[in-house]
Image 1 (tube, protein in one colour):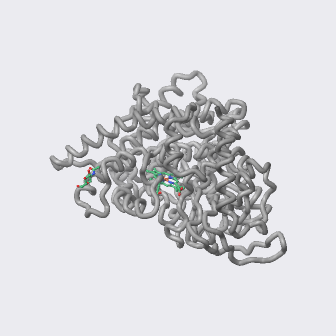
Image 2: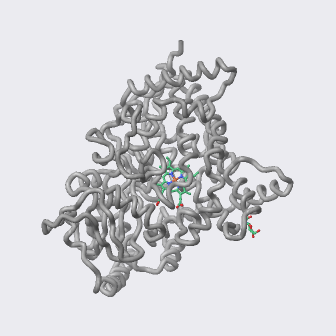
Image 3: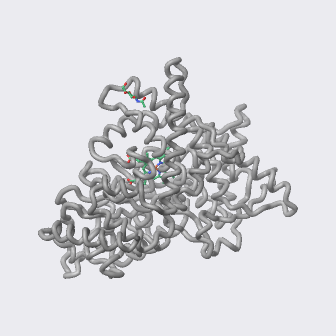
Length: 540
Ligand code: HEM
Ligand SMILES: *[C@@H]1O[C@H](CO)[C@@H](O)[C@H](O)[C@H]1NC(C)=O
């Protein structure tokens, strides 16, 4: 069955390619790595290696613009050049839409919500959602994040105290993802997953390890099919995603069923609460309230509102939880950084006690310069979303920060691209670009953020010019939400615990599964794994 599909799609794709490409400009003169084969092009390098492995190599060998091959010799571009990225994300507006074969994946995981939408639909949806994602809204969620971090502290303390060695090895993602699931449930929907309490919650189960289970280590057939799907109308792709067999697709559909059921219940409850004038500060309540007062142009239908709930879970849960896991790994690897951060946290705690409070406020967090530096450096070094995908909506010209020397020896300052060209935007490579971050870009060093501006590039990323939350008109809408959540967890956990690496960490992989997930070599099928030794810190 699989092979018949492959053959059928190949024939169809070739026909379309010949038709579409008969008149187009070639990018043959742009340097790039040898394709692995005519059938797969460079896709195996792009999708199968660990996150960043190919990207760092390409950046070093070819610079910020690299020609790659899709199946059947079709050109694509891989881009980490800051000016080209700025143009695509920001300046060009909606002229670099998402690739249809990627949008159907968004639709599988988040229905016709914000990550799927494009053009005018995206503009309207985004406008309707923005009021829930501002700075005051994010700051108001700090106590919720702090509460969830405290729950995790309690659990870890219990287990460590019960262990004879006074320390235990924990699989960090297992715990962190439970805690952040509880956090996003409460902060976004005022919903209790009870993931940390091991409550048998079907929605929690539907979200545990979701992306790793569906997207990790794709087979060659899958990589091929996903790419040639480009030539098939989106509705037909969506139809296939809904009916084809497969473990990953099955998991995604179960997730959809469970999420829809609960989203409907929550939406009804919130609409009722609004009618008796009782609204919460969770994202969903703000959205429902905004919808009732907004003008017609920025309303969300009920289906769209349900879609946004799944979209927020998709875009906000595993991104944040994996970012936290990677940060804890780095702190375990570099104990000096960890203790310096702890000293700052303890000093701030003393200050808070002195003024008669017990909890960190958003401005307390912001006043901690070393925490801010560690947070930024960690987001730079471990961008949870490492690639994004677009295509040119028309014949266009990309500006370049750094000239490209073509294979025939010409030096070009800008790069003409044909309509329909697929581009892979490398967040992970931009975040390590030496022209932007300096010669030591490959080193994890929070120092670069203290007392100076770390980035030397054009205005690009929404947060400290990092590309981790992307930039421009469809930058991460939840970035403020994410950074306060990360800070609240870091402060709470580093205040109470010491983190140390274990032998197993030598086998650690940066698994590419839509987001970057830590796994262990030899046990990749077990999903997210990062075993760290945790002990209680002795307090004065
Ligand atoms: C460290 C955590 C996070 C990272 C690294 C991250 C990263 C990103 C990136 C790179 C994009 C752009 C994707 C693209 O253009 O294809 C994005 C979009 C998005 N993010 Fe985040 N995100 C994080 C947390 C969150 C949170 C907590 C939420 C919600 C509460 C969220 C909601 C969204 C949404 C809805 C979009 C789509 C925006 C649009 O297309 O207009 N994200 N995120
Ligand atoms: C938003 O408002 C419109 C118009 O009043 C309404 O039809 C729609 O159902 C509302 N959406 C939600 C999710 O309540």
